[in-house]
Length: 441
Image (cartoon, rainbow, N blue to C red; front, side, top):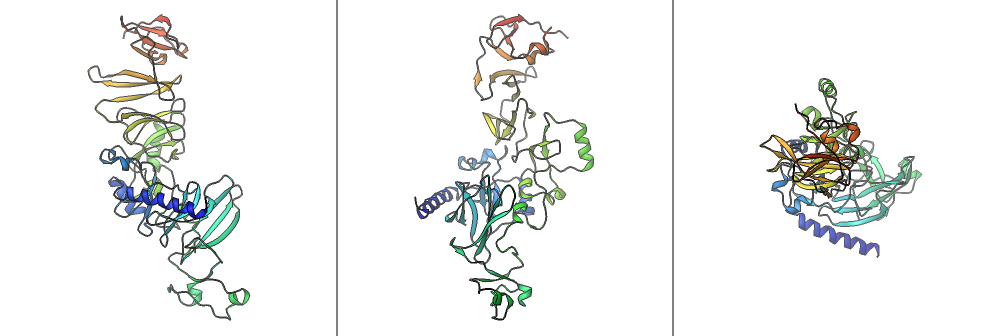
């Protein structure tokens, strides 16, 4: 397939996606709206956002909008989705539009799209590789600079310039406006033959007066760290939960960490909003996992659970994503989706994993307790009860039945007889080991 045909196919793919998403919207809550007003810069009327869905808004979202959840899209100032998640975010910089074009990754290749989402051209470079990084800069007066470098040493490898058609051009002759004697002017400076730069070098293909409002001449190194914030010169805090000294002391005093991770609500105020970057600000008003240094473990915001506290056990934790109960791994990835509402008519409690088995329980308002519904394995498959009405990991019975100790629990279960209602200690195959008598208090 030729490069031209490849670009045409990608352009058609973007055009269809744009048409499908033209009426779709993003639904930030009041806190996120405040974040956008405080933090987001719209370039050419568009901003790249992480399309975060929560348990409040998902009910009013269409199926097409739900399909955008956890993806990256471009929105306009009315929160309308203009370009859907048919691209990837490059590894080394944060995409933003300039002069109607934006560098993104498409199927692992660096390409430039226009404000309608159509692919204009591809650079023919991989956007993310283990050995080499690529930084495709924004356009400045029709010219963008492309840098590549070594991931291990961070040393630059190649540098070249392109025009808005993707064609390589010679390095532009950059003259600061102040030195050119025309400060504030955006007109090209025409060098005179006696200028030292012209005497020493061949006349360049393009002459640009440095624009003080966009002083990077295509090099967006500052954008690598600011994630699109208003002040590129300022360093913003990324993926960190901010607490003042008093709140931090009280938090640590509660000893909230299980396996080195705690589940917390990310609260924001004006002071915090002024310190964090745009990506971190999407956590505001949501829930995240943090480590003992208060670093956000996963770049994902979770819903507030209605009937359980997310805690990791055997590498998995229950959580709520887009209003549904799921289990996530230590990378924050959803590995089991129970497809059960987090806050539905029935109060459902997903239990921790013990011996690779978790028990899903249902609230019983009559007894003010929870009754087991079923068991699942680490793949989310329902497990048979082996002839018992209920079958639970034996650890659930420690302290409830006489003579049942922690030493009895590995690989064993407690099962309720289907006819007599008596509980037994059984092995993994359902064979009865002994009868259990409930402790009377």
